[in-house]
Length: 427
Image (cartoon, rainbow, N blue to C red; front, side, top):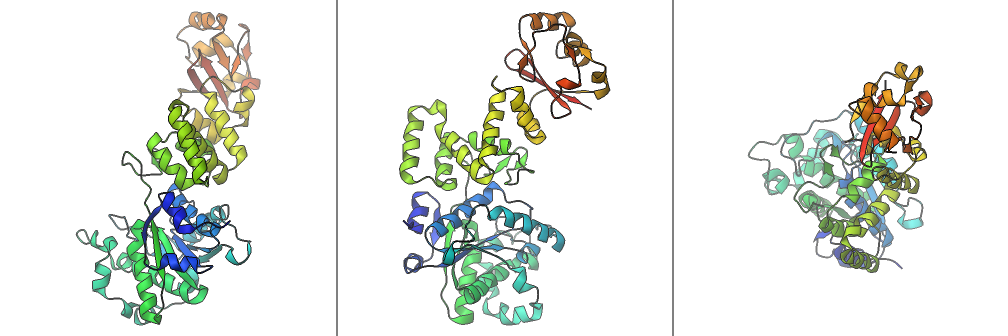
């Protein structure tokens, strides 16, 4: 059964603005609608996921989603939400970024399902041959400077200055909408609420250049309950690319959101229906210490962005810090995940040559790594069964540490008592 797209956005708390007539348009049959993505990075971040989910719901409602990757607009830079001029990227970097983002988007949308198959377009394809003089003559004359100055993206920058390059961005984006309206029968543009001005400029261009009608929907900008920017951590952005944000860190990001945010995010970022979400909320309220909402949210998003295998590894990795897990669990982790799991753990560097001739366990724990301040304390903890190497209890006081004890060819995890971990790196 097809979804009612607008109602779906409403109950999920995603809808912000909608142009009059849009709901009627969507009820009339299959509609093509698009969202543009900024290619300033070689990966989408979790901040982009809200727009990806919008397109996903749009397609599930029986409509045709068009993903516009901004090969041309990426060369200009959108001033929306920015306090200063952006650095402009070279065409080679933009092309690489576009390819990476395209590969990520293909994981979410169905590009082979008949008339409402998703489609990816690059606005550089229609701007590369468009001369500047032709553009300002054929397009620029239809939108007044006074009209452009009323947009928040421009007004907010007037005090400190805005270049003509960024000032013209709304005209370039507006032409994207006109081009897709004319050549792809695309009658709807969607985006975050900060894009309303740019989107409306597009509908105005369509009206003035061809007397046509087009429509707009914007979604709520995703925020955190404490006012901090969504998708940012102390270490930086949370990316969809596992090489930029490991699957473990990605999973932990969702697992550690507040209860208030979990209620909002589970509606925006999962495909769970209303009945299921309300059921999960009741369970969560009855046993908040179990963090049911966070666990279900983290599981669903991690599986869809990465894979079920990555999710299972992330859960295993999470359990390593709580005394569970085995040497095999450690071996299965990627080096990036291993470093991420034990990021806050004391790390000790030891020359690999020291291990080649073998080091008695008591010397290794005291003199070599200083995990224990003395050999006597190391011996006492060993005798009490409180020392673990790579999650395995050390029961032999005469054990000699050698190359066979390291994992990932360069690491060893030592544990003193239940919670004190040390990551030894052999260099």
